[in-house]
Image (cartoon, rainbow, N blue to C red; front, side):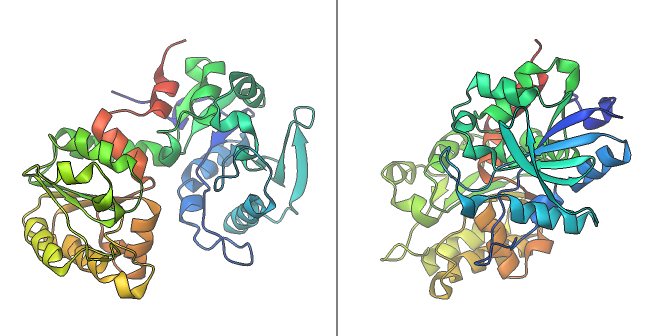
Length: 347
């Protein structure tokens, strides 16, 4: 299936509503600590600017719960984006659509709206709110793969108010789909699925992907959730933690290493333990090294997993780093995402 690309749109002189994923980590001084998620959108932004489009960027940061929270303002992101794009224009506050929407003007053709999750209508997918947001532009482009498993207004509501020929996906989003489609449809086997971290929804993904994967290796807090003991009785699934639950055991590391060594494809979402504490980083570090040494095609998704790989100096040795763990797993399980369906569904 060919998905609509930003290149398909006649964007010159038009207003573009561009959904990005700028949920970046901030320092104690409210500076962007890691600009990776900003960089993922640059190819699309530069293409639009070069083609004389007027861009209104929609994004979020953290979980403000539909209320304004100064500590989750996107102003540090606006400053970093201006720096990366080498824009000399002084950032100005701006209001749009009768002051309903507010944000930061970075140049004559580039505006970053303030955190869209400051509005309760975003996470509630309020269609009146979505229609108001859509009214700001002529075209809609989704460049937020990592958020596209969410039923939020700026992901699935807004596209409803654009004709199909005025919606598209950004370059980074399309690259995600290209890579994940290949391993979903024709992976080099054996396929090893590594699941860790604390998000319980990974249990559902384990159930959905058990028939696709040859092995499911489980670490992190997932091992302690009620449903996992039953899953661990499945012959394809392995996982065990140390007594205080902060890391996988070294015996588990040894078993995982043996399986990873023979893998043809590895998909990893979530650390094996509390790697932020050096006392409990060993499991995650050992598994990361095993993944790199395996020679398998490796795909890693999720912020914490990427942080761990970067800390261990192994991030550049991974075949592909997906911008979102949950979105990556859902796409592998379902072959689509709500954000994709919102773009391609006829109206």
